[in-house]
Amino acid sequence: MTDKKKYEGNDMIVTVDVDKIYPNGCHALKKVTTNIQRGEVVVIIGPSGSGKSTYLRTLNQLETISSGEITVDGVKMYDDDTNINKLRENIGMVFQSFNLFPHLSVKENVMLAPLKVAGRSKDEVISEAEVLLTRVGLAEKMDIYPSQLSGGQQQRVAIARALAMKPDMMLFDEPTSALDPEMVGEVLDVMKSLAADGMTMVVVTHEMGFANEVADRVLFMEDGVLLVDDIPENIFGKVTNHVRLQKFLSNIR
Amino acid sequence: MNEKPNKLKWHVLFIITIGLISAGIYSASQTINYKWQWHLVLPYIIDTSPIDIIAQGDANAAVNADGVITLTFDNGDPSRVISGADQVLISDGDLIFEGDLLARKEGIRSGVLIDGLYMTLKISVISLLFSIIIGLIAALMRISDNPFSKNLSVLYIEIIRGTPLLVQIFIVYFFLGTIFDLDRFTAGVVALSVFTGAYVAEILRSGIQSISAGQMEAARSLGMTYTKAMTYVILPQAFKRTLPPMAGQLINLIKDSSLVSVISITDLTKAGREVVSGSFATFEVWFTVAALYLVLTSTLSWGIQRIEKRLANNDR
Ligand SMILES: Nc1ncnc2c1ncn2[C@@H]1O[C@H](COP(=O)(O)OP(=O)(O)O)[C@@H](O)[C@H]1O
Ligand SMILES: [Mg+2]
Image (cartoon, rainbow over all chains, first blue to last red; front, side, top):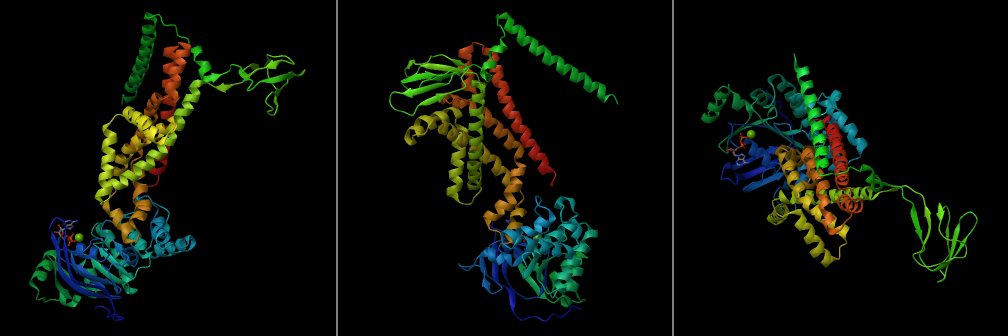
C-alpha cells in the first residue's frame, strides 16, 4: 500500500533514551528511542496527554530534554558548540493553532524568516514566497492579513511559512485538529504533496486515514512511553497483538 | 423608535448644565468683586511690545539721516550697525555707556505663556522618548529569566511607583544634580523619564505577556533568535495592544511635567505663576494655562487615536 521510498539510508533524526520531566514533576517522556530517516514520513499517534507534542517539541528544542540524546542531521543537539537557531532553520514546524503573525500580511508571514534570519535578498524572497503560496493554493490571498483567512487557509500559510526556510524536515503537531471538518482535506492534501516530494516529516495526528495512506512508519505512544513502532500495515491491519494500541484504535473509531 | 428625541433631550440638558456652571463661575467671581480682564492675558500670549535695543559696551554713536546707528566701541571691538529701528532714542555723536537704551523696534514675539508652552512641549517630548526607551528596557528585564535583571527591574519599578514625583524631582535635582553637575533642564528630563519609564515598563510588560506563547514559539521554530523574535514578532504586536494605556501614560507625562516648575524651569506652569504676579489677572491666567495644557494633551490623544485606527485596519 505505502510507496516504498528509496531511503538514502542515513538517519535524519536520532533520539536515544529521551526523558522529559517538566518542572512541575510531570514525567512526559520515558526513554524514547527511535530513528527517523531522510525522506521518511513518521506519524505519531496516541491518547491525549501521552507525550506526543512533548516529543515533537524536543526535536527542535522548543522543549529541552531531561536526559538522553538527540541528533539532527548528524548534529548533536546538546553539544556545547551546537547553534540551536541554525539547527531550527532546517526544521520547519507547523502548530495546531497555526500561530501566524497577525500583524503581517500573508506574504510577509512567509517572507519574514528568509529576510531576517537567512538574510536573503528581498527580490529573491518575494518571488519564493509567491511560488510557495501558489503551491499551497493561496496565490490570491498574498496581500491580506491572516485574520481574514479560514482556518484551513491559515494552516496552509503556516506550512508555506515553514517551507520558506527550505528545511530538510518538517514537524506537524496536530495540524488539522483545530479545523472545521470540511477544511481538513485541503491541509492534508498539501502535506501529502510534501510527502510525495520526499520531505522528511514527523506528524502528530488523529487522522488515521492519513497515517495509513502516507506514513512509512507509525509510532504509538502512551503515558510517555513509545509502545509501538511499526509500519502502518501492521498497525491498522486486522490483527494487532498490541492490546493497548487495539484499545486506542477502537476508541477512536 | 423614540431613541432620537430622547437623546436630543439629554444633549440639550448637557448644554444647559454647562451654561449654568459657567454662569455660576461668573457670578461667584462677582460676589468677590472680581473684574474679568481677559485682555491682560493677551500680551503674555502674543507679545507686541517694542523690542529694546541695548548697548553692549561703552561706545561713540553716529546716527545718520535714515536713523541707522553705528557704534564704535572704546575697547576696539568691531563696530555695530543698527538699522531698521522704529524709534531712535539717541542722537548723533552721543557718548554711550554699556546698558544704555539705544532704540526700539516694533515686532511680534511669542509671549511668556507661549514660551512656557514650548518648554513644556520640549521637556515632555524629550522625556517621552527616554521614558519609552527606559520602559522598554525595564519591561524586557522584568520578563527575563535572569534573576539579576528581573530583580533590578522590579526594584526600579517599585521604588519609582512608591514615591511621589515631586520628591523624585528634588532628589534628582539636588542630589544627582549636584553630584553630576546637571543643569535644571537635564534634571527635569531625567526625573520625568525615570518616573514615566516605570509606568511604561509595566504597561509594556503586560502587553508582551498578553501575546500568546505560540507567537514566540513560531518565531523561534523559524530559527529566529530571542532578540529577533522580540523585535519582529512580539513587540510590534505588544506596542499596538498597549497603545490605549500608553496614550494615557503619555498624557500623564505632559501633566506631570508641570511639577518641574519647582526647580525653576520656566514651563507653562511656572510661566503662569510669573504672569499672575505681573498682571494680577489671576483667574484669567490659570484658565488660559489650563486651556493650553488641554491643547497639548488633546492633540496627543488625537494623534494616538489616528495611529490606532490605522493599525486596526491591518488585523484583529
Ligand atoms: N508545559 C508543561 N508543563 C507541565 N506539564 C506539561 C507541559 N506540557 C505538557 N505537560 C504534561 O505532559 C504530558 C504530555 O503532554 P503532551 O506532550 O502535550 O501530550 P499530547 O500531545 O500527547 O496530548 C501531559 O501529562 C501534560 O499534562
Ligand atoms: Mg498535543
